[in-house]
Length: 141
Length: 210
Image (cartoon, rainbow over all chains, first blue to last red; front, top):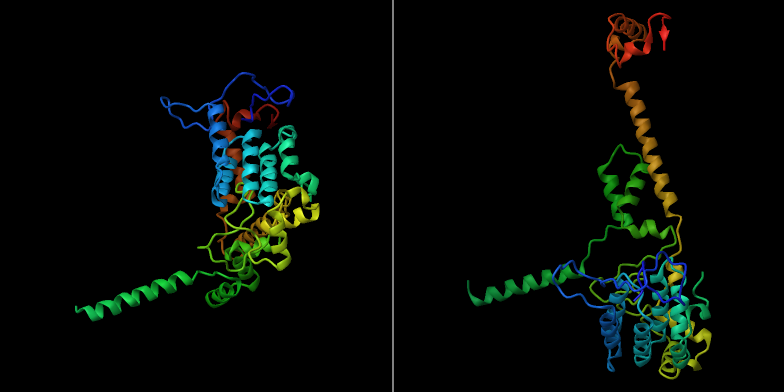
């Protein structure tokens, strides 16, 4: 999971502000002092499972994506991959492209996150035949 | 009360509820202008216009800055809206599809690498109105806002000036320059606030300010 002050892999970026390698921040956490905090891996797994539902419907896809985009993080490639496959099952190419736009937007000023994401997703994109916003020319006016 | 009139009463309520659901409060440009013309007699039309613009639904103002306006949409149905916070809105942008669009939608059910770039773009535009880049375009609205603020400040200034000329009475004689000079002279002579205040700033030997 990527965060503004993140612990990205070294390949992804070196010039991010104070990457604290190994620091595992609690996620989207409520301010419980006693409650169990979900780990990043658990969070990722939960979302991958959500989008992997074989008979996922349009509403669930939209709800999932809108919720995920509401969090203060850029989703891991595996979550986006799961979501793109859900789009495929729903025969919805437009939403797939929209998802890519949305995660790029989430990265905000951190310009190196999105290329990394695409790099990780490239096999899926070629497999499913999804064009990136850049390839379609909609990433600029 | 007998059963007969009860059901009539209920029918009346249901009818009114139905009506209320269908009606919505449209504070559109025309009705607001009319209201303003009726209520404000003396106020110049320019001011009324500005007030109308301010109070009318924001769609009117936004429309002049390149934002699209939804014409009296049914807000109780799933809506479409462009937002970076909500990438996948409740419904597709284009609801009614032409036969060509339908064909494209059928093709979408097959492998996507068989779609050309133009077809993919067309599919995107069926579902969505603006792309993220289009959504994030800056607008010139701030100039209108700042300009309007200055206009209102200027107007206020004019009003205050008019007040000074026509409303305020003559200031007391203690404000005259001559009086003020004599007052200051007296303050210095009686050594008012000699440590840190006014008399400390006066050089008594040289007879001038320090």
